[in-house]
Structures are given as C-alpha cells and as structure tokens.
Image (cartoon, rainbow, N blue to C red; front, side, top):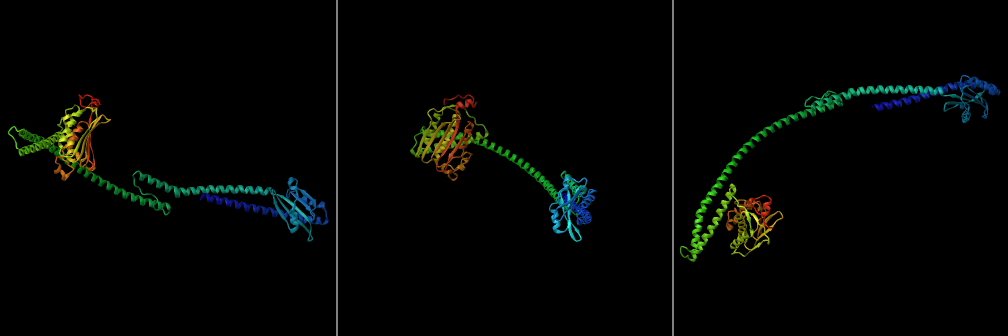
Length: 510
C-alpha cells in the first residue's frame, strides 16, 4: 500500500510538473507574442519606407531591457536588413533563424521554436494588407527554467513530506489494527504454552483478526476438552495398571508357591525313585545271582526247556536292572548328588568293549559293525564308567532302531582340543522337528511304536547330562529313512590340563 501511494504521488507530481511547465511556456509565449506585435506594428512603416536605420533603432529600443535577446529584420527574399542584440546577450543568441523564417512566410502566421535555452519566434510584417518583410526574435528561457526548478523542488518536497506523513499514519494504523492484536494473541499463546488457559483476545472484532481469534478460541476449547479426556484416560490407565500390578503380584506369589511345591514334589519324587531303585535292585540282584547259578547247573542239570526259560529270566532281569539303574542315575543327576571320577583314559579299550557288546545286540540282524579310529588316539580326561555308559546307550539305540545296514563308531580330534565321538547308523531316522525332544526325560518319538522298541526314554537324557558334566556337547544329525548320527565331544587330557579343569590330569600324546 505504501509503495502504491508513493507511485501515485510520484506520477501525480510528474503530471503536475508537466502541466506547470506547459503553463509557463504558454505564458512566456503570450508575452513574447505581445512584444512581437508591438515591434511588428512599429517596424511595418519603416519596412514600407525601406528605412533600415529606423528598423535597427526599433530593435535596439526593444532589446534595451534584456528581452528579447536578439531581434532581426529580413526582406521577403530572406536578406537580412538589420539586427540588434541585448547588451548582455550571449554569442549563441545572435545566430540565424534558419527554416523558421521560411515556415512563417509560407504559412503567413507566426512560428515558434523552443531550442535549448531559447524561444525563437518568426512572424511576417504586414503593411496595408501586404507582406512587407519578416521579423524574428529570440527570448531567453532561463527564467522559465528557474521557475520550473523551483516548482519541481517544491513539488518533490511536498511529495516527500506527504509520503512521510502517510507512512507515519499507515504505520500507526498498522500498529493499531495489526501489530497490537497480533501481540495480544502471541501473549495469549505464550501463557497457554506455560499451562495457563486463557481466552484469546479480540474475538469480538468483525475483521480477519476477530475471525482468527475466534478460530483460535474454538481450537483452544477443543484442546482443553481433549486434555480432559486424556487426563481421564491416564487416570483410568493408572487404575488398570494398579489392578494389573496387583494381579501380577498375586499371580507371581501363586507361581512362586507352585514352583516351591513343584520343587518339593520333584525332590520327593527323586528321593522316592532313589529309595525305590535301591529297594528294587536288592531283590533283583538276588534274582540275577540265583538265575546265573541255575544256568551253571550247580543245583542240578536243566532240561533244554528249563535252560531256555532260565536265559529268558536272566535277560529280562538284566534289562530290568538297566531300567532301574537309569532311573537311579536320573534321580542323582536331578538332585545333584552324582559324582564323576576323573582320570586320564585310554579310550581304545573302552571302544573295543562297547563294540563287542554291540555285536552281541545285533547278532540276529544283517548289520555290519565298524570301528573308525585314528592310529594315534589321544587320551581323554573323564569318568571311564560314565563314558562307557554313554557309548552303550548310543550304540544300543542304534542297534535297536536299525534293522539292516551298518553301525559305525567314528572318532576324530577337533582343532579345539576336543575329541569327537560319532555313532552313525542306517536305521529309521528322526525328523528334524524331533531332534530337540529326544534329549528330554521320558520322551520317545515313536509314540505307538514304543511297545515295539521298548525303553523308558531316559538313556539320551542321561547321556546328555553326563557329557555336559564332562565339559562336552552332544548333538544329533538325522532325517527320516536316512539313519541317525549322534555325536559328542570330550576334552583331551592335555587340553584339560592347560585349562585347569579336573585337577590331577596328565597331558596325553596327540
């Protein structure tokens, strides 16, 4: 708006100066024509008489006051008859008038020309209705320029003052109409951001600021309503959290009690199993001993039928003793009462012994038994009896679930100073999703086939615990129909000595 006002004032000033200049030019032209008429009337007689001297005197009398600056008289053929100049006329004021005389003669009327600092006028002199000659006059426009400059300065000064006044007025109006409402609205938003809910000012104004204040007020009321809802939701959430915490605490207490009860029950179960295992093993050992005595025919000769029954009793008794031993071992492991007797073990005799037992388990099946052992087998650090138990568990499982093919016992030394033992068979195999379950207590993957294969499902669980107690690991690689490969690791005697495990171990030769 200020720019528009400034432009309008500048255009108005320019138009005003243009009009003022035109007015001054017209006024000067009228004055010059008045002098021209007076001199032409006086000189017309002298033109008729051909008195050049009087023409010059007439021109001199006209220029004595300084205006016009130069007067010249010409014959109709353009010959200069006489000329005179004002006393202080500049040299350039004495020049000829050129085509200005010819235009005046052709049009039979005066002709003017604004040229630089001069006004030039040419007019034919008429005597008794006939053209007698030509007169030309030159006037100075210095006074006109000075007056124009004064008016220009005055107009510019007036315009600048008007612009300044308008700027002040517009600034005051903007301050009153725009800045003050904005500042009040900003102050209100500052208080709101500080947590003090205030109504935005200016809502009663009919202009845009009033609309903005009303819109801000609507938004503020919506925010306050939303804040109230949020506070209510937060309070409800706190109540729910408190109730949930109480429930969790109650449930945690119940679970702790249940856990303690389960642990007590498990301890009682382990103690019961241990006691029952001892109670069962005592009469069972007596049965085994008497059955063996009968087989040796110390109490008389047995018939073929009696000998077959004696062998059946002996096999089933030994099987029952193995089951009882497994239950006893599991109870010892769970109660933490099982102890390992560590020593440096030459594994080769142990391997040959378990392989011989495996041959006996598979003598009625078309199964090839293979022992794959390196020439220089390092000694291991561990409990010989428990290692033999693990090997027998794995090999008996391989013999149980393999109907034909081969069972291989492979041994190799790993870079991590561990000895890896693998029992690989060509049996029925185990699905990948069941690999983890086979090491759990009382779990048998075969389900309905349990009666066919027998067992309690404790052998692999006990083997896993025993291998981990030795510092090794046990794992399974198998697929249905592709056989199984159970592997476990044992620390070499030299590795156990370097790691400070199992005091008293002696390094073995790799």
